[in-house]
Amino acid sequence: MSATVPSLGALRARRTALEGELQDAESILAAAREGLVDGSLSAAKVVSAQSLVHTLQGALETLGEKITHVAELEAAERALAQRRAAVKHLATTATDAEREQARLVALTAKACAALDPLFEQMAAAVDAWAASRETWRAGAVSLAPGLHQPHYEHNTWAVPGAAQVVDELLAELGARADLSAVLTRVHALTPQTRRDNPRPLDLPDHELAAAVFALFRRYYHARSGQNRLEL
Amino acid sequence: MSTTAPLTALNPLMLEAAELLASGRTAGEVKDQLALSVATFEFWRQDPLFHSEVGRLRAERKAETNKTAETAAETAETDALEGALKEQFA
Image (cartoon, rainbow over all chains, first blue to last red; front, side):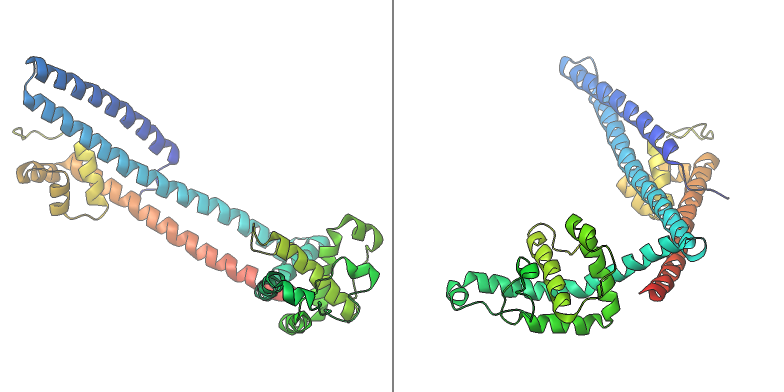
């Protein structure tokens, strides 16, 4: 026997019908109980009505599970179709601009995956540092050369050991060009930066470090809500 | 159930029994779950209408399983293509 997956519409229509039957059965059960009290109906009628109510409740439960399952199947199929279309488009007919955008998204995802654990380490360091007024009073250690230049002053986090984390970050990411591309995108998110510096970044070390820490600030502030770096 | 005439329609209890059988429950499990007597349940199982409903529901389940497998295969194919593109980009 060949069959297809039942349609959601048909299943939902059946559920509506079953719900109607259940309401009727519950009314019959209530009437049977009243009849039992006043002696006009036998206990067998109540048992029979009760049994029908149970059956219909069971059928509704089974149908509900089926509807959920079919809805999940359909949703997965729709999502997959969209994804397939997007990937095929990218592989075949995408414009250069679309491919560049996709490349940036892929780079960003890669960078974020590398940044997350490192930024979490840095955040823990900041937490520990902030928790200790004594450490704070002892004087903040500068991050990396150049971070205290006026232009980057507002992005500076004075965290002991942070420069090493930046080194680790760069080692983790490997390709400097990739990170620059990601940071270009981060900068592009800031209206002022977009206006002042629309060209792709080719950052010297200290500026790269500053940009990483600007990124970390965003991560740190977003940490309480959503502990992920989203560019 | 005293009659031996073929069923002309399935009531909710029969439909539920058919669903449970199609879902892979054993006859004993269905009988116990729905509190059916052996005689009643055997009568249903031998009835062409009930038998056909179980077959239809089993076919539907098979179609669902096939669809799930098909979606999984297409997802793997898409993952591979997307992975290759990402490698190319990043």
